[in-house]
Length: 131
Image 1 (cartoon, rainbow, N blue to C red):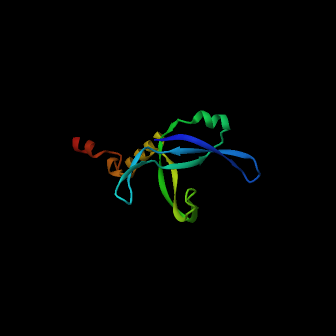
Image 2: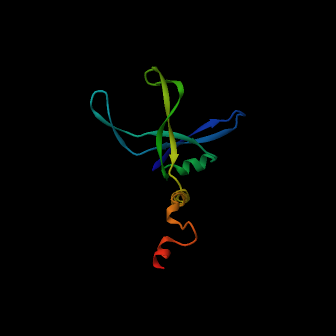
Image 3: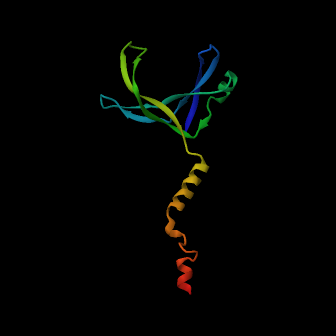
């Protein structure tokens, strides 16, 4: 599960505004370079079709899914606090949990892939054994 913790306004190419939602995953413990553990949480942003009042109302809402690391083309990132320039090759992105229908489709596809459970000549093996 991830939680909507905020939103930001952005502009389209034509200058019209739209809003992105800021998502945060659960608390994780990470090990620092000095060997000390610290609490952190992954964040990601997703675009939305909502207006500002709706975005405000959605803060605190939980959504099924996770924030995962995705490899991308290298890009430059500047740390605001220090001005340090880093070259990164990943982004954190939101991935929704599979919907229930998708899980059911997978189960049916798995069953259909194993044709040994079906009769090959119209009479099941169990029926032939009973005769």
